[in-house]
Length: 166
Ligand code: GDP
Ligand code: MG
Image 1 (cartoon, rainbow, N blue to C red):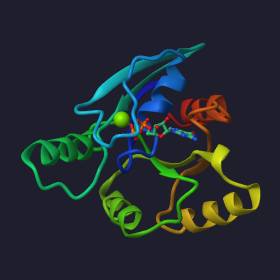
Image 2 (cartoon, helix red, strand yellow):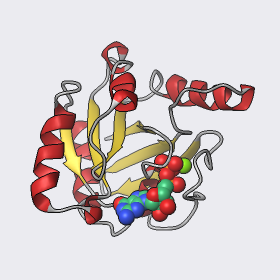
Image 3 (tube, rainbow, N blue to C red):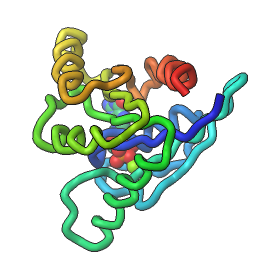
Image 4 (cartoon, rainbow, N blue to C red):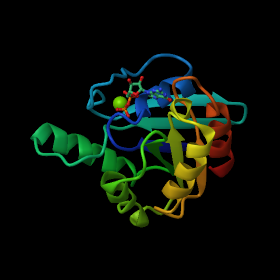
C-alpha cells in the first residue's frame, strides 16, 4: 500500500507536531506562533508493506495578506491531490465557526477524510467523549481518531488506520 495524505486544519492545531511525531524526528519547525509552516512539507513514512507520504500544510483561516492567501491556497490545493485527508482539530476547544467553515470545504473531497482530535493530553476523558461527538457531527468522517501529537499517544494507531484505509 502507498499513498499521499494531507494534514489540514486551523493554524496552531498541531499539524507540524503530528508530522514530526509520525516521522519520529524533528524535521518540521513547530511553534506557538501561527503560520510557522509556509508551504507544503512532505515526510515519507515507511512501514512494513506500506509507504505513506504525509503533507504538512499551512493553516486554513481567513487570509488578508497576499502571503497568507497563498498559504491557504496551498493547503486547499493539497486536498485535491491526495489519497486521504486528515483534518486536525483541538480537543481543548469546542467546534466553532472556523471548524465549521473548514468542514464546509470537505463535501467536494472525493477521498476518505479522517478527523484527528489532537491535544488529548490537555483535557479530561469525559470532555473528550463530548468533543468527539460534537466534532463528528460536522462531516461524515471515515474515522475519528483522538491523539496527542506532543506525547505520541495513539499516533501509532492513527498511522495504522491510515495504512489500512489506503
Ligand atoms: P500547526 O500550526 O498546526 O503546525 O501547529 P504546531 O505543530 O506548530 O503546534 C502549535 C502549538 O501546539 C505548539 O506550541 C505545539 O507544541 C502545541 N501542540 C501540538 N500538539 C500538541 C499536543 O498534542 N498537546 C499539547 N499540549 N500541545 C501540542
Ligand atoms: Mg505548522
